[in-house]
Amino acid sequence: MSRSRSDRAEKLLELADDELVLGWRNSEWTGIAPYLEEDVAFSSIAQNEIGHARALYELAAAELGTTADELALGREPEEYRCAPLVELRQLEWARTIARHFLYETADAVRIEALKESSDPEIAGLAAKVDREEVYHRIHADMWLDRLQASAEGLRRLREAVSELWPYALGVLDEELRPEWVERIRGRLRFDLPEGRPVTRAEHTDDLRELWEEMTMVRRSAPGANW
Amino acid sequence: MVWEVFRQERKGQAFQHAGSFEAPDQTFAETYAREFYGRRQESVALWIVPREHIETIGDFVDELGRNYHRVDGYSLKTKLKEAREQVAQRSG
Image 1: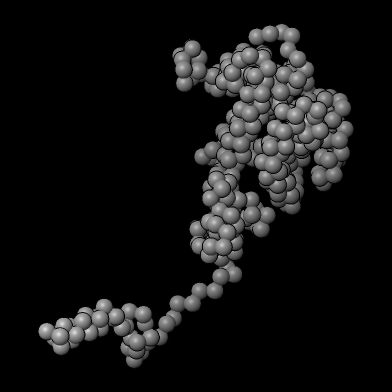
Image 2: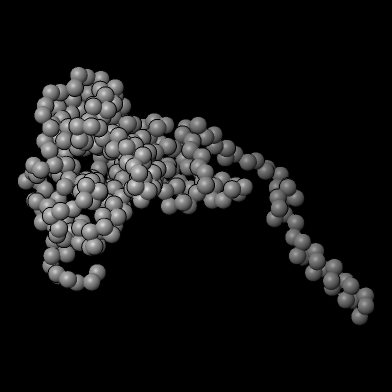
């Protein structure tokens, strides 16, 4: 793959990789979420994220002269541009909700900026994606409120947020991050943790493991036409 | 808390009972209703009602067997058949 990708393609890949990997992680709750209704709802959010990833990969693929599948599943783990926040495997509900809330809030800030893009394709796709993301944010917000409404929920959420904080800081760049921090501060009933951002250049071991699983079928038959 | 869902398939049509689900409060219920009964564009509107707010009436007394109150108490088919036979006899 070309090393001299445009900023546009680079940004699209960051976004697409975030959505693909988080969609994958969220889908790990399918069948084992806390109760049936949530199982269906959270699986559906996971599916939406992967749908957004596809649309973003398609836009990047048109520019890079490749395909969405090739970008999504044909790269090496170190080539992925996702934020380490979405890579973490965490089958614990308070952590999942904490990440969901931290990520969706960041995504909202990012999409708002993209909707103002001078590139009509990007602005158009951002507006489309945003119409679905509204419901992800409602879902994240309602769970955040629910956790913060009980002493145990609040304690577990607080632990989760302080653990995830450095990773969450790495989702947005320095330009958009302050706005995100203010929105988070406005929603949490406790003080924000301290920390330095874990950047997109620092992948976790969890990504390598996920990549093995995610690309397994495709790698089993190289060049196959699915 | 159990919620009952009624969905409207097209504008102007009657709402029909679609099913039920559990949700702890109204915000959760709205989110789940949208996911389960709306995301495939299968409804244009939903009503969601906590089951405990639905009043069930199930006692219908008919001690004297007044079947003329019921739509099945009077067979139009039989009456028609009789009338046709009478006409046939007269003209035959």
